Image 1 (tube, each protein chain N blue to C red):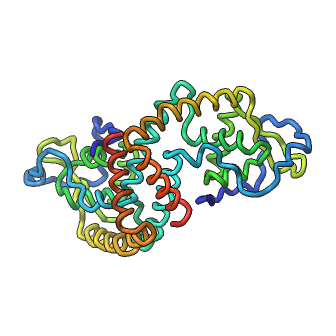
Image 2: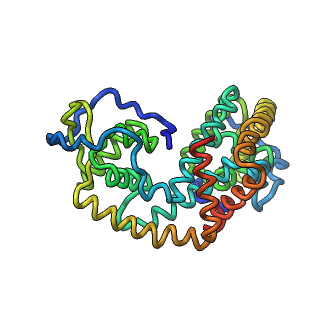
Image 3: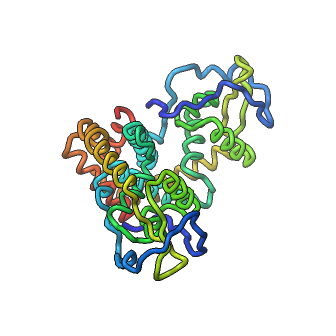
Length: 174
Length: 174
């Protein structure tokens, strides 16, 4: 298993408390590390797979500068016009401070607007702008044809469907 | 699909630019949001499943106060005694600033020590303490019997194995 993010450990920092090692401490030698029980843990495998898939997602839509979370938010706005901020954040499981920061970013790029609700003046509804709609349409096309296309190719359509079904079961029933 | 983290949106904050909505904006009404293309995206399903599984992991070892990442680091230390900080961080794909902070925490809890390498004085090897070894043994037992046990129960052993295999394929080949 390769590291998906290479840590930069070139500049040494003094540890708070170090003791001298005997030369024997270094005899473990080079080569891949033993993963032990990690390789059989579903949570670990989920996290590694998710990071890999998100990296490919980011590369795929790099021209549009959208993260997976931003894409999800724009998609929910398109599918649920006029629903409020709380509903969209809750549905995606995004915490308020993160969601507010994300909306600030999307709004400053003119991809969406927050509209004060006429029924509840403390609440804001979310709407895509025309630019948001066009950007989302481009992103969807790239994701479907490139990103999901590559996943389909690697797994095969039957395995891909089985995987999606098991993941949804975990998300909903675990 | 239920939200796994409920955003707290009780205290209203003024948006930077708001316009008045017409009453029509609120007619979308209540009920679950339409997920649109999201429900077919593998990356979204991976993220939701991973969050659910990590939540259960945290609950399972809450008495030991270990995150999945901390558990992985302790496990690699046990399986690879005397290997250095860079190797462990790279293998797990943890970036240097996060890894240094994590080691500070683990060391202050006396679960591990950083030992200056005799061969390369800029490098630190990582070692479990006796307390670290005991804590890890307890965590492994809880994870195997409770957490992974529940996953096995939900998915069935054959599906669980197929899922693990597909996730490993994504992590290694995608």
